[in-house]
Image (cartoon, rainbow, N blue to C red; front, top):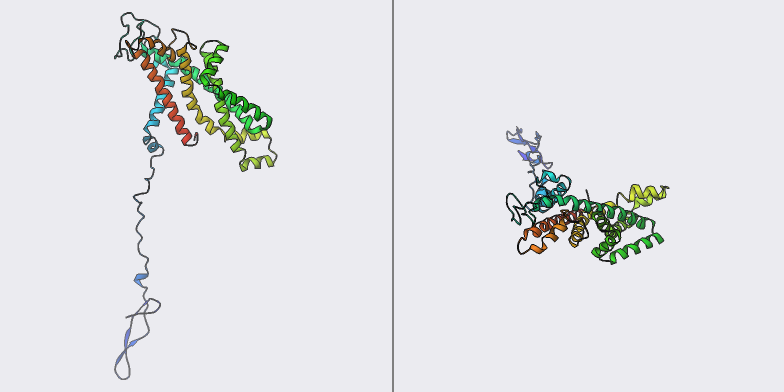
Length: 327
């Protein structure tokens, strides 16, 4: 048996010649070569440096970011206090108790009591109704007015843009707290006026971001294509520019939510907000500032609630900006 040049096995058969000697018969019986069969390829093995495959959707992403989960829970709890405060406390935030004056935190009074015996935890929960309602109003005012002004400035351009942006520059040049105090002094004291003042002071932030996004979007090819086929400018603005410009503006809402809480609490602390005995968060801190040495929980625990909600709002906003806006 020999191997032919075309890589087939050749079986040699012996034949006899006239002289009586046996010679090999060159006529082969070909058999496919076994070595021609392709070798088995082992399945690919993931590299040890390759990232693990996701098998559970967004669950690993949330598990890997416990800070974001905690921030969402804190803000959700504060919003729940705002809408259903009776679900989290059964005590009357206005009812004094002469037998429990300046009692420290305990199982019965989680945040202790004040100089009149009122439960601080109950007043903090019910105070969320006042503070967060004013905050939502302020953010809504800033978002709507700022988005409209920024969209008009970026899309129309020219003298309209010049006038709007100069007004925005003036608003940005004045410190926010000072501007809110001026607006409150002009409108009068009260929670609603404080919310309006805080919203007006935040209009410039939304207007600048919205204008920048509109200027970016109007340079896209599909905007030029829509204009070239005769699409009305108002339709381009409402159907193409605005939907593609709102992501960064929406991601600014949680950040402004936290900043508005701080501003409203600061104005309440200074006496511009809700009058006593309303359990407004800034007013709660103000009521305990004279008793820090005797009963520090009166000011510190409501202040800790304000700090937790503000930091959680900032964490959510940072995550939205990192991901490029709302998905």
